Image (cartoon, rainbow, N blue to C red; front, side, top):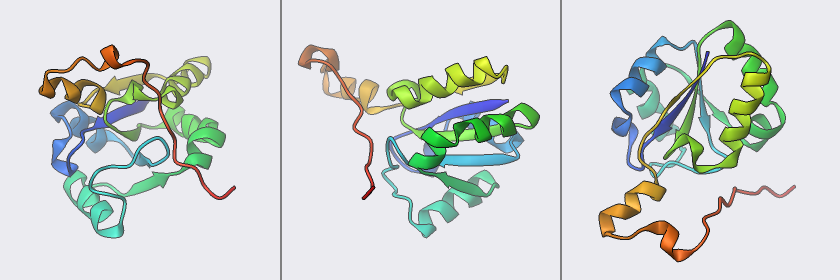
Length: 144
């Protein structure tokens, strides 16, 4: 099973209870670091905090893993429970929708656990984001 778990916009304590339950059942955890980065950053201390709270080792999933080696992750998920952390809401980027489509084609079960994102957090300001035009995802690019 592949769990796509939305982490919130704050720190490691902002995971939902459902997300934490899923993570604790997984044998492999990936932190997607291509479409967004957590506000706590991805330095060693921040990863150590995540690992300590969740009780699991976390592998950072860069562009290559998320876009080019996604089938490898899905094959793992066919055999055991795997979680992919996503900053904000899992469907804030088309990359994650593509993962779900690929998983379904490979007959890998997927469960999505939502959390807050900038898309729905903007409502705290009394604004409706879609009134300002279309929204897009801007991925992080590398030298290549």
